[in-house]
Amino acid sequence: MSEVLNENELTLIAQRLQALAQTGLTYTRDVYDRERYEDLMGIAERLLTARFDLPVETLQNLHKVDTGYATPKTDVRAIILHEGKLLMVQEADDEGWSLPGGWADIGDSPTEAVEREVREETGLEVKVSRLLGVWDRNQHGHPPYPWHVYKLIFLCETLGGELAVSHESLDVAYVDPHNLPPLSLTRIVPEEIHASIRSVHENKPTWCD
Image (cartoon, rainbow, N blue to C red; front, side, top):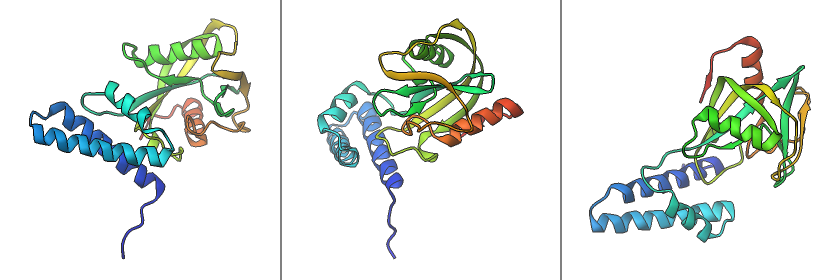
C-alpha cells in the first residue's frame, strides 16, 4: 500500500529540496550540476508557492539573498512574568497574541536579539536571565511554513521602561497564562508557553527539540 503524506511531511520535503538546491548551488563547480540544482530549486519553489499560496517571485527574491549553506532560521522569544502574569503582544497582521520577539538579525547575539525585540515591541528594557528552550518549529503544531525555523525562548527580567504598542502590534498586556488569549500560532503555540513557564517555576533543564 502506498504511503499518503500529510501536510507537515509535504512541507518538510519542500524545505529539504530547497535547502539541498541552495547548498548545491553554493559549492558546485560543475556547470551541469549547477543546471541540475537550479532545476531542483525551481521544483522546490513551485512546491512552496503552491503550498503556501505565495507569488513565486517572493521566494525567488528571498532565495537570491539567502545564499550559502542552507541552515534553519532563528526566531527569538521572551518569557516575561510579573505577579504571575505573562507579557504578550497582539500582532497586527493576524490579531493573534504572541510572546514578544521575532527574527534574530545578522550581527546580534541571541540575547541581544531578544532584548532588542522586546524593547521595540513593548517599550520595556529587559535582560536575559537564561535560555528556557530551543524548539524545532516543524515538530510542535505550528501551521506549515516555507522555511525551517528554530525558536529560542528566553526568560527575561524587566529593568525599566514603560509598556507601549509598536507599529507592528495592536496591544501589549500581561495576561493569565492559564487563560491565554487566541494565539498567533505561526509564532507561538500553547505547548511552548506552558513548557517554558513550568521550566521557570520548577527550574527544569533547558528544553531542546
